[in-house]
Image (cartoon, rainbow, N blue to C red; front, top):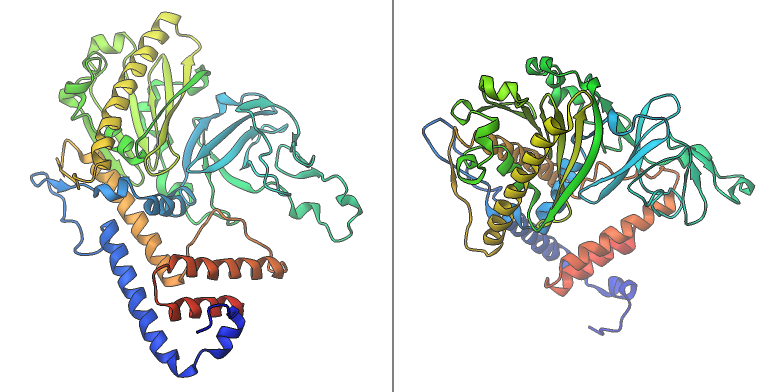
Length: 458
């Protein structure tokens, strides 16, 4: 072939008799790629053995904690679809109060509007995608983009787009900030769901019905707590290794010398249900007297809450790649507690979390080295991590199968372009087809040509 021939000319010159052979080759390549994908991510082969209390269970393979492709799939399958515990009403107590959050590359704002409603929206200007806010938090009644001056109300409604009032075909109502679903539970905790559908695929009740009515919450009045401070630790670890660590106390006697003073490890156990893991331990009378009656719950996928009479904190494991995450904490204190009572337990938990950071960072280093594949987890003492990993496996596998059936990636949080925007759809289809060609690096030239043929056909 003449390598300087344009794609269109080449499409016309390619012999039609080869089409059947090309189709067979593409089919075989697709089958091989799917097989490699399954084996790489551990999705192929037999299902994990049924769990019983006397048989150790193999953990997720190391590739799930290091793979960029797996991380991107988690962004689509988990963080675009599931309800995420994020903060508490006490963090934004006044109209106009807002805080900027992010998770897995998605950046958003949570705000209290003039009517006391809690709203959330993506931190993306609808004009040219510049962040609407660049500070961590604040109080304002208008979000004004510092790029071209577009401004929005506290419900995300477009208030002003300079110069666009002269354009007859511009509809302000179609250019509000991208909304995010919000659920405020009976205790004031704020949850978000990034699914772009008008009604999210997964209802909050599907995963968390009744979790805000735990019997042990009767010991606490959440209206007595006020926001005190936030802090974070960043490290080179996968977010799931943090969750595995939090959800067992098998390591506590070895790694956390403070734990016996706030919990009776002999009575410790976890209860797993729906999308949460409840941690239980019977405190001694002395521990109760010191305010160490703690109710801890992990909310799948990436958040937990520890409540005590003097304080509670929300812990979020925030991924920023396959091997980089933050441990972020919002700390609330009981307004009736003394500084001493609050500081004792607050400082203690900071020590414990710092110890966890050390554990997870060093475990991740060895996972990255390529020797360790996985270990055997104890079915009872590591019941929490096993439940967490089982849920990860199920959600990831389900979404991946849907993508294989559809023939494309499924991004539930992505903007839905109006069907009338034919130019946008055509441009996106062309780019998708070109991307198909670039991913086919190393394939036979004929296959690349066929892929480009598909692009030209859009």
